Amino acid sequence: MTNGPGDILELIRHREMTRGDVLEATGMSRMTLTQRLDALFGAGLIIEGSTTGATGGRRRRSLAFNTAQSHVLVAAIETTHARIAVTDLGGTVLDEVSLDVAVADGPSHVLDRIATGMTELMAALGVARSALCGIGLSLPGPVDPETGRPSQPPILPGWDAYPISEHLQSALPGVPVLTANDADAAAMGEYAAGHAGARSLLLVKVSTGIGTGIVIDGRSYTGVDGGAGDIGHVRVSPGSDIRCQCGMHGCLAAVASGRAVAAELTARGVPAASGREVRALLQSGDAEAAALTQEAGRRIGEVMATVVCLINPEVVLIGGALASAPLLAGMRETLYRLALPRATRHMALQLGALDEEAAVVGLTRLVVDQEFAPAAINSRLRG
Image (cartoon, rainbow, N blue to C red; front, side, top):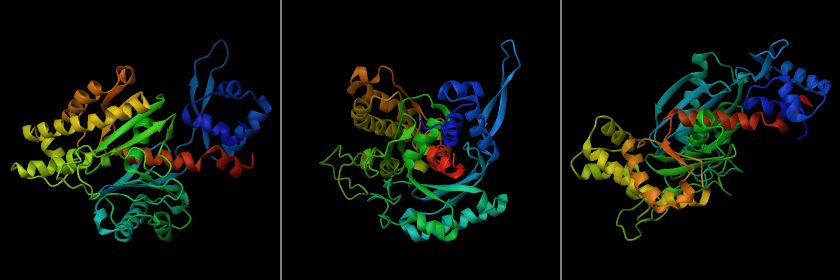
């Protein structure tokens, strides 16, 4: 640890600390710490927080990350709609808007709509471009972590290697753009909001497709080129006649996604066109939708049993349009039966808490992690 101002900020960002706490964690001198803190206060990056209990002397005031210092603009893109939001640096949504936009229409059309929605939302909220520290955007497909471009996304025809950052920066010049997979963003959102102490967390997102976001030691794990957690295209029924959106037959997404459940319901005389419509049926108490969703959970649990044995996670959450008691029950049936007992003995399996807010909160966290990283702040403040 270099103990520059950025390194001090990294400590304070994740929990309120007193000056004494920082001294103990870093081992630096009081004079050096004062210099570092003065630089952070001067840049508006930290503020004085709550006071702590006295121990015979005066009460100590804590230091806190200034989440109002700037804003993050995020867009969580699903297959047929998108949510655009402006947040503070802690992930609190200040304003948001939903758009009906289909990824099947291609990246240029979709991103033009997103850019227009972003500029309109900023204008309505009175947020200037100079007040943004970055833009976060999530997609329902793998994203190469090096380039920020979609990496052969199975359900995003025409999006492979598309220059998303450059496209958005033509409308919002000078604002850094971070692109992430939707399950990765949702996993980070759930981690930041309620599971920050977990060493490893998985979020299984079941919507039009199926994907798993992985957070290990507070960092999103995406694999060598963004493909980590893409369990929807594991072939679970190779002899099946059901064709997946990726072009193969028998993929998990083809038999257990929201799209698959909707298709089966329609075949049984209960019209449903998407995972969102299945969700509405589940919320209305439809017994057939619940039964099919529970069966989908069983199939997903079969694949997740292997993932759990590999990762040995502390927390496994379920998110997406089909996140529900029936899906959770189905996953429990097969995952715990097929996985090694040792792999699950300290594991919590439950529904996510943030629902559709998960990706928004996660994108904010990912942007802040990047733009307020120790090296970036040390360079900015020349500490």
